[in-house]
Image (cartoon, rainbow, N blue to C red; front, side):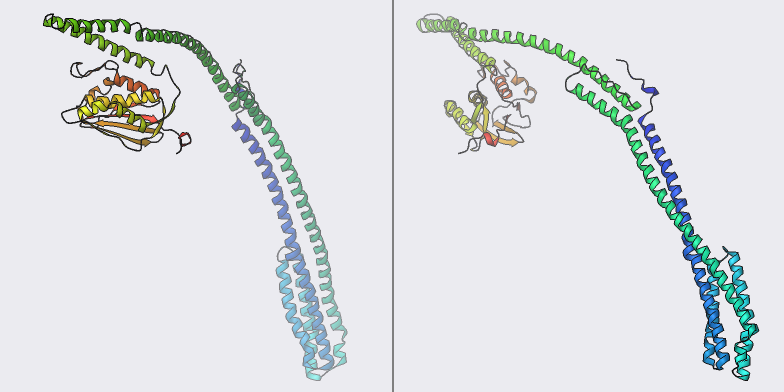
Length: 516
């Protein structure tokens, strides 16, 4: 397969950065446009609500204050009573308040209107100094006078003040209408801009999503589909993907792994073929071994029985008639034949462990140990031994005859290799996770730690056959039986006196254990 040229492709990181950069630029432009529109809207709102609109209202209040002043002067001139002069005085206070508020609202932003306010204030001052104040002084001096109230000069001056105020109010009304129109346009602009930006963002996000789907998701989905095809067992199917550099490189690595798996499968297939051939050879060898076991149990033992029988016959018939050396030779021959028979039987039993398997059943270890103790009762009585067996021995799964052989071998060795004191054999058991750990401890002669592994090797003896009889197969048989049942056996070297053997057996699930 030709590997994709991933060096010329953009990496996914660059593609992602490009997409994010586009989103940021568009979003920044949209935010800037909205900010500008909001600024225009704010300016228009301030103009309507905080400048022109309030200024117009204060000019209206100013006009009302002037009318109140003119009404107060006219009433005082006709009546001469001070209470009629109150509107004049309060009108001046209202004039000052309205004038100050209007000027603060207009400020420096509208110099022409500020100048108009100053002109109106000047006309009002002229009206008061030229007409209102002299009339009030005259009425206080001479009393009420119709002529003073209706003088043409006062009317002309006041009309100038009122006309100027009305003109300013009219122009401010036109300015308010224009500001409101600008406010409406700014609001409409902001609304359309927000809608446009929202639509643009939706289109842009959708476009980015489609692009990312085509350049990232689709290649990954294709890679995943090809990987699933390979994982399903089609290891000859090549992995070939397109997309960003990382995905192409990942596909290349996965295809390299696929090729290695194909090579390993070929090696495993070859190994399986060799294993099958070896298995066939092993079956043939086992068949020959079974044949050997049959020969050993029948054909080889028959000559040994004859040799032993005739040697014993010679011993009984000619015992005492021959010299002492001849009797010794006959005894050697009889002993050798008997030991050869025992050795062949033990070797046959050792070879059959695990090969002639029977169905594993539930075995009550307590009953099994009782049977072993009963079998060894002559040796126990002869040695004066004490066998300490707990009452709560568990139930395990296995072959009772083989497991019984383990206990019989260990207890028998404790009776055989005893010291000066009567043997004391203690059996205990404890559970560790999913294993039972059995312990067989005695007070015998013990075993050096350097022989902890050697004693489990077949035909390995630590003592001469004349001192302790045996074939050297017993502990090797125990290890083979325990490992056949899924456990381990070892010599506990932490004890200072006697001999302690430990071995494990799998725990039987409670659902498998029979209930009383």
